[in-house]
Amino acid sequence: MKGAFLIKPYNIEIREIEKPEIKNKEDVLIRIKSVGVCGSDIHYYKEGRIGDFIVKEPLILGHESAGIVEKVGKEVKNLKEGDKVAIEPGIPCRKCDYCKEGRYNLCPDVIFFATPPIHGTFCEYIVHPSDFVYRIPENLSLDEATLIEPFSVGIHACNLINLKPGEKVIVSGLGPVGLLTSLSAKIYGAIVYGIEKSEKRIEFAKGFGLEDIFDTKKIETKEIKNILPEKVDVVFECSGYSGLIEETIYWVKRGGKIVFIGLGTDFVNLNISKIINDELKISGIFRYVNTYKKAIEIINKNKINLKPLISKNFPLTDIKEALEYPNKNPDCIKVIVNP
Ligand SMILES: [Zn+2]
Ligand SMILES: [Zn+2]
Image (tube, rainbow, N blue to C red; front, side):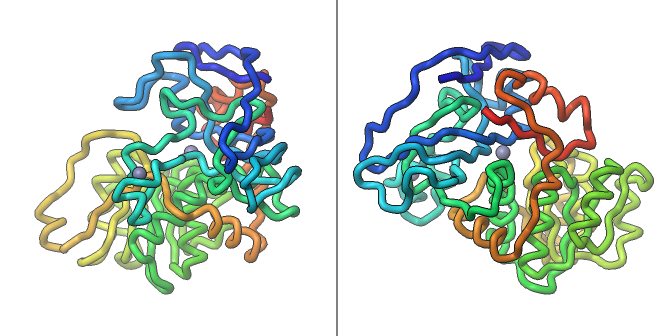
């Protein structure tokens, strides 16, 4: 089978490798059909590392994946050959305190696609434990099913702060994660405002039923606090841009909550006395936990059309173009690779 290996920054090679085989009775063999290009893939492609995770050996990127079950292990009960599936990319140890408490996203021994040295899914086949593989409805395309991964981030963010109906929310940065976080918050019954600078994304986000979207091309980020119709209960910061991160504390009410989702900068200036005086609750989120099944159900029951989020498709042989497309086309939302 073919796999796309990142050799060093900007250098990707399609190599012929052995097709994986089922070794564990609870595993399934999946023919990968669609993989979303994530910001993290692009980061590895350009820098060869994210923080402490360094690509030392050739690595297959890709973790937002969907495919078709080709073969199931003897003990697999939830899936059968031919099922269309979405694949949750992280396999936790199942034994540590975090795993036992149901917070397996924090498991220190999690094995996660495309995080060195674990290969991802820009390839034709993978073998995966069946309980991290989820059947999707017939009417959901495999391309759309890749979006369950970023949608999971949004659902996890809403779960983590116990978002309630009627609460007011700002989502800053309306890329794929920001848009899908807005969608999650809407489904949880929140009233959602957006902040974004790309005209196309703003145009697109209007279709998500946001209350209002503030265009940071026209408004200084520092001005946003002055033009908000009211202070909000929650901010989901998805841009990762320090200028916005530093402003979030002025958008929430006293006792409000801020969740940092977007990665972009390691250090920012935050007004600590404001945080203390307003008793703000600030948290980060790391990936997601127990969201895949819910996400599939939400998409199915609400008949959510995710197709418009997909900007362009590429075959595996054009992976280099696929990884470079989003930076060359900043208005694009999601690029999909079809191995
Ligand atoms: Zn991702
Ligand atoms: Zn664990």
